[in-house]
Image (cartoon, rainbow, N blue to C red; front, side, top):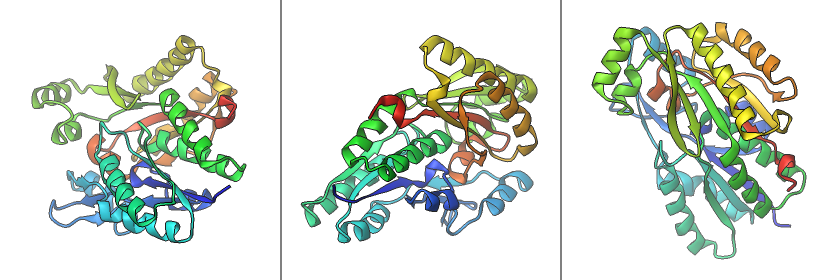
Length: 297
């Protein structure tokens, strides 16, 4: 079996340490605080610096996707070592990262005609993308082929979910995700939207006026999801992500573990700059994905 390397764009929020632990190579997004100079997320700007800007200075950063050259520069060393490549990208509905990665793939296939280069739109972002990547890495360690890993991603991206709450609507409005009137109305009413990511698309799961009610509603939405689909929670791995509201994570996690005692939870994570630039501070969510063993691959 040919050796292969797993790649992902940086919107997965897997973090440097966990990425190294699972041998996942990252191609970061770019973040700009002044809308002029762009920095590679994590590599050139820290999350602490980023969150100080959006919280203390009430700033509205901009993001830019990795370029074709960024993907080429990341892929080429692995190909030169004789490895094949599989790369996941953030859902097409939120970024054109898939286009940059695909163009890089086509260009490199001319240079390395015998190599296998798979680029897959994983339909997810941040925590759910991370969970899918971790399962991919586990498959590689277990001796699964790159084709078997591809098969897993195509199945897992259908079943994975993110259920999250946004602190307010201002960043969604600035980022063009909702209209100005909706953002203004939401701010006046102090509405906190609940959002669901499934099948690569974002939908509204409701709205509440307090964070406590919002987190309780996210638990309810998650319980209803498993009831309606008939899926077994023990087949899933999960974690909680937050931008900066760490004080509410323990209670939220406890409620979810009580609702899903057989589900495997890993440690909570901090949502990165690419995602937080669109959702703003005050975002907390529940991410879950199906384990590869559950598909009998």
